[in-house]
Image 1 (cartoon, rainbow, N blue to C red):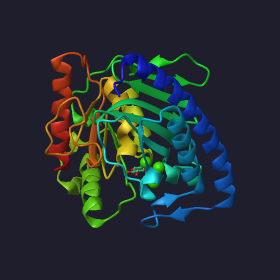
Image 2: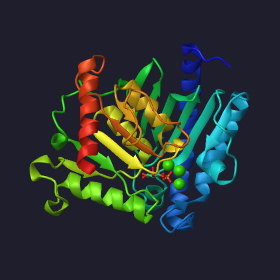
Image 3: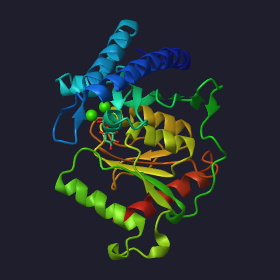
Image 4: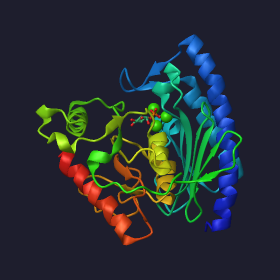
Length: 310
Ligand code: IPD
Ligand code: CA
Ligand code: CA
Ligand code: CA
C-alpha cells in the first residue's frame, strides 16, 4: 500500500470523526465508572484499567478494520490481550483508547483517545481528542498540526510564534510518575525531578532550576501541550508506542523535535524503533525551526537537559 498526501487527508477526516465518537463513549463511561467505582488493576495497584478502556478500543478497532481492511492495528488493550503484530511497512494504526486512565477514574479532565498511523515505521498521522475539554489535536506528515476547540475554526500549531528559550531554567517541563514504579525507573525520575526543581540537596546550582514541572497524567496530551507551545519539554521513561505515536507526528508538524534516549543521536525524527523505544523527550519549536539555528537551539537544550538530570 502506498499512501499519498490525499490519502492522509482522507484518513485524517475519518479518524477525526472516529475520535469524536470514541470521545462520546469516554464521556458516558466516565459517569458510569465514577458512580460504580468499577476499576481493575493490571501489573500493579497503580496500573488501572476499566471496561471502557476495552470498549473504546473495540469501537475504534472495529471501525478502522472495516474502513481500512489492509491496515494493521496495534492498541494498548489488544496488546495486553495478546494481539502483538510485528511492525512492518504495512500502514499500521496505533491506538490508545483512553490515555490517562488514572485521570479517567478520578474525574480529572485530562483524558484523551489517541489514534496514530505508522507508515514505513514512522508516525505519519495523529489525532488526539480530549472529550472533557473538547480539544481536538491533529497532525499529518506535510500537512501541519492543528487544534480545534469547541465550535471554533481549527488553529495552526504552535498557537503563537515560537518564543526563544534561552536555557532550561526558563522552561516549563512535563514529567510523569507513570505506572511503572520499579526502583530503577523511579530513582531516575525522582532524581531528575529534584534536580530540575532545584532541590539544593540534589547538587544543581539554584540558578539553573526550571520554571516549574507539570504532571498532566497523559502522555498524549503532554505531547499536544508541547505542540501547542504550552510545555517547553516533556520527558518520559516507560512509554509505549500507543502513548506517543499520534503525539509524535503532531509535535513534529508543529516544529517540535522528538528524540529517544540519552544515547540516541538527535534528529528531527523519532530515532529508535517506535515499538521498543520506551524513552522519549520532546521539545517545542524554538525560534524558526525551519532554520538550522532553531533546530540547534532545540538540540542544545536537550543536551543541557540530559546534562542536568544526569
Ligand atoms: C499512561 C499515561 C501516563 C504516562 C504513562 C502511560 P494510560 O497511559 O499516559 O501519563 O505517564 O507512561 O502509560 O495507561 O493512562 O493509557
Ligand atoms: Ca494503561
Ligand atoms: Ca497511554
Ligand atoms: Ca490507555
